[in-house]
Image (cartoon, rainbow, N blue to C red; front, top):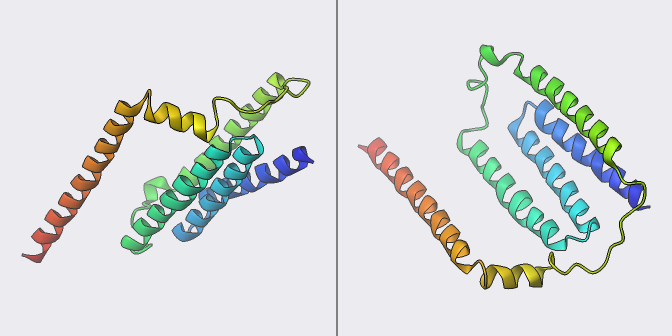
Length: 170
């Protein structure tokens, strides 16, 4: 049953990835990316990594796809001027490279798959409680530095956006 569910999720993930490449509409590409992220979130939950599955939904499916859609709406959704004639064969090249990469991945995984499933127990180092206690005790300084770096980047973006807007009004 788990193998069948995994195969279905893998098919959805591959169809979502192909939809991102094939779709000419950027909104449809973002929705295909959302399908891809959701399939991976369910795969993480199947593997017993509930925290990673929830983070996948919140960060990637929530924030990143919304950010992509925001940028698409900001530039008007018209990317025809960005796609010049010099990139005419870029989509075909991307599909061929994706097929070669997927073939290499399948062959590499098939050669290295174990014959029996490993014994699983209760997760001791990957649980939310273990991650939280390590994050707020051992790694509190890097965690706070990363938050300050993200805050500085956000403030820099706001300052640059205001500066550009004020120059356009003059």
